[in-house]
Length: 211
Ligand SMILES: *[C@@H]1O[C@H](CO)[C@@H](O)[C@H](O)[C@H]1NC(C)=O
Ligand SMILES: *[C@@H]1O[C@H](CO)[C@@H](O)[C@H](O)[C@H]1NC(C)=O
Ligand SMILES: [Ca+2]
Ligand SMILES: [Ca+2]
Image 1 (spheres, protein in one colour):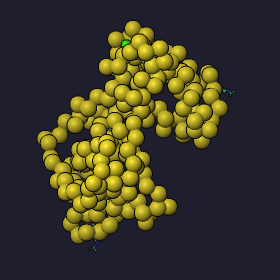
Image 2 (cartoon, helix red, strand yellow):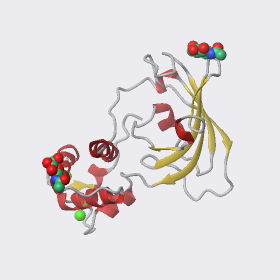
Image 3 (cartoon, rainbow, N blue to C red):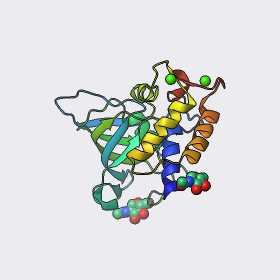
């Protein structure tokens, strides 16, 4: 259980995928409902809580509904980092909390040649997605400031370790120093690109080059 959380947390913190470049298929976006008040719009790196229904475009079969399946719980994901299909990453920018969109996603931005579960290979998909909540993602400017305890615009190993400790405690786990140090080393190996012993704001922010 601990390791599962650790992995989930690591991929949250470090997660961005480097996919091969595609020839730019487009997602068709239709706004079905837009709230009158919209204090904040979704941007890459934000965490979004959504309910959604996914249909096969070919014959309208509902292949997944967050309300009907998996205990009816809405799902959290981070926008723009390849955690979800590209169609969502591309089609859910600038959304308000309470907004509902219909996305028509070509197969290449969905599950592609392989398909997945109830989605056959080469299927175009239709999603009706409602955003329930938007939060700062782990890679946001706000998160960086929260981690940068001495405001020098770079993260030391100590600051990252402190952040991990707080995150684990927030999730109800006792922080394990040995384990944390191991994670910090791993994080710095990947993130400290110029090996100066600090993660700069530039090194920290998401890389969006696959979008
Ligand atoms: C819709 O298409 C899928 C995949 O080709 C197939 O499995 C399913 O039986 C079809 N459903 C209907 C109602 O035709
Ligand atoms: C902390 O993690 C290490 C490495 O996984 C493990 O060997 C050790 O027993 C853990 N310590 C505590 C107090 O849980
Ligand atoms: Ca700092
Ligand atoms: Ca650095």
